[in-house]
Every structure is written in structure tokens, then in C-alpha cells.
Amino acid sequence: MQEMANGKMHFSAPVSKDRIISKFPKWYTPQACLQMKDHWHTRVKTACQDRTTRNVGMKMSKVVVVGDLYVGKTCLINRFCKDMFDRDYKATIGVDFEIERFELSGVPYSLQIWDTAGQEKFKCIASTYYRGAQVIIIVFDLADIRTLEHTRQWLQEAMRENDPGSCFIFLVGTKRDLLSSAECHRTERDAVKMASEMQAEFWSVSSKTGENVREFFFRVAALAFEGSMLRDLEGAGSHSHIGAGDLIRIDQGTAEEPKAKSVKKLSCC
Image (cartoon, rainbow, N blue to C red):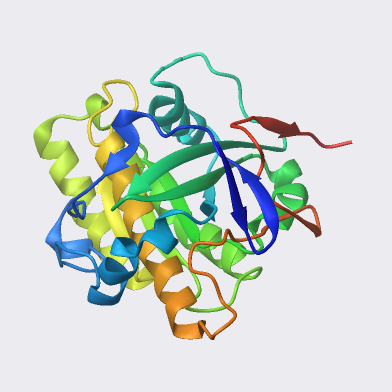
């Protein structure tokens, strides 16, 4: 499908039926959520009903996934983007990314999801790609409390490259399938406290079973989409076009939205 926006031609692949979001996704727990409403902001809802908004090129938001080595960042992304789980998946070298396309209230939208390496030697590379993030996802292993303690440092490093208040922050505990109900409850209680300190929304998931993974990414997409739309509406003048497509920063430069879903791997020299 080809669309015109601001005099530029945009190419977008059809959105699959399982990526259509018509209702505002709910939070995981009310003790640690970014907001508790269950509907779109009135201004966003009105804009989504505008035919010119629906016909303009796809918007995109940048999502950065950070966390310790082996906490399951890549498995989390692969479960949602590819519906697969590989227990023996090799550690990410440098940075990878996936693009997932959605339709929210009739408007096309994408997430560019950056999977960053957890190894210390790759931090100098990964930190470059934190810049310009609309969403920061900090991942820890529910079965290893030390990785929860390290999430503060990961947030600090990601926010060095972004303005305060410019990002939605999510704290995600993985591997809940490895814990008993009692163990999971105790760790989640600590994680909720940490999320509150970070002003983050907490989620508990299992990439192996897929539990809460789809719901989590739908929540990310909905909040990021609404935030992006509101920024456009608040800054809109007579020459602005809602949904015209954000530019995503890639390696110190800028690039328009990729023409098709792709995976890009960057490694340390």
C-alpha cells in the first residue's frame, strides 16, 4: 500500500489481524501502572475518527529494551514478534531491532523495538541507540533478584540519552514460569516497589509459555501511540499533519520509516 504524506510517498505492509487494537489495553497490576483509564484520550479518539488522520502515513515510536545479560530480552521480543521461544538463543551482539506494525482505532502505527546487548563490553555501542526513545523497557529475571537490583543502573544509563519525562518506562520481570506462586508473589512485591521509584509500569511475563507477553506489548503500543498522538495534537498548527510518521534516529543520523519489516544486527568492531 502506498500513501502520500507531506509530499512524500510512504510504503506500509498490511497490518495482521492479531495486531489490531480497538480497546485500550489494561494494566497488569494497579499497584504499578502508568495510568488506570480504559479508554483513549478524548482528543486522540476524535483524531482517530478523522478520515484524513487514518489515511496519512504510519507513525512509529522507538522502543529500547535494556537489562542484564541472560535476563531474557531477546526471548521476550521473539515471543511477541515471531511467536517463538528458543531456550538456547545466543546472547545479542551489539544491537538488533524488529519492527511491529499495529492498527489502533483505525490508525496505522509501528513500534521499532531495539534489542540491546547486556554485556559490559557492548554498553558503549548500545548506549548510542538509547537516544530518541519513546519507550524504555527494563527487563530483569524474576528468578534472580540481583537482576532487579541492577535495573536502577540500566534506567540511569538509558535516561542519559533522553530528556526527563520524555519516555514511557516499563519494568518487566521474565521467566515467571520458573517460580512457584508464592515465590512469584514475593518477587513481584519487590518489583512493584522498584517500579514506583522509577515511575515505571510493572509487568510479569513468561516468554516460554507466552503468558502476558501479547498483553504487555499491546499496552506498550497503546500508551506510546496515545502519547505520540497527543504530542502531535498539542504541537499541531495549520501546516501539521497528524500521523505523518516520526523520524527514527539511527546511529547519529536519521532515517525514514523502513519500507518493510526487517531485522538489523550491529556488532562491535
